[in-house]
Image (cartoon, rainbow, N blue to C red; front, side):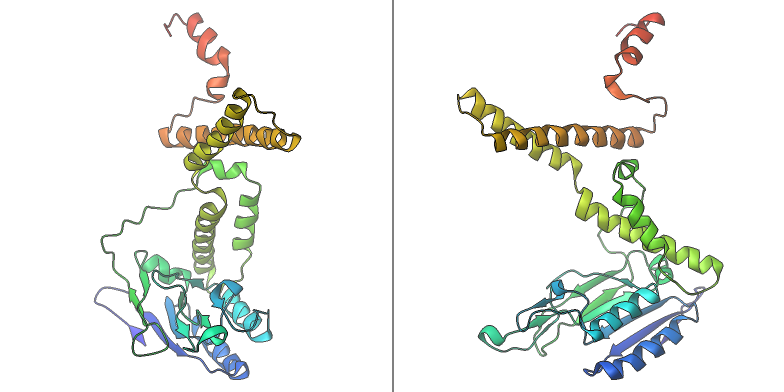
Length: 286
């Protein structure tokens, strides 16, 4: 379906009801790939009858990296498509069996090209309750509601993690289709989304992590104050926590320096010459 609105460029909404036979699905992947090469913002939504990872399955036989799943994963990656995520129940389908035979999977999803996401940055995907079907209905909104979406900003503290370079390198190496500007746009969108996910899963909230590490250090030092003898393993953990605390303080300093936009602070408050002797030489009071 081609959707057009006054004074707006058209985009494509593609509804999918994939076969349970992976050999038939190969034809679908090929047809969708041909559609995506047109370079029009596209969203594909529906029942793909396939999952991408073990986290998308519960119950039944153990997850395996089968041919059909690899082909689905390759189709998504080859075309630079982005999973739009969701809110609501984790799984979209249940076989409604009892006991150990009961299986849940996330076989329904919405995926889109990066230029579609740039067109509708406030999109939302919701998994609704299963009531009259063994599938969850998917509700997709392209308009902003009360949820605030903060703009993407590259955080300088990410550079203190060597993995950040790998995230950018891998995102930029994903093959995408379209003309030169479309390829750049799609890769930038993929890089942004992967950095956000990596930041959430790996870096996390440095302020909360700092509090947690301080609590561990305080507990160990409190035990020493009460006369308890720390084991060698406890001492190793304490030294590790102190090193982690130092690293987190450094990240916090970089974070606030970027937020303040002050460019002349180069060495932080550990440089006593910069913050004391230099100011005294200039005749300033501290």
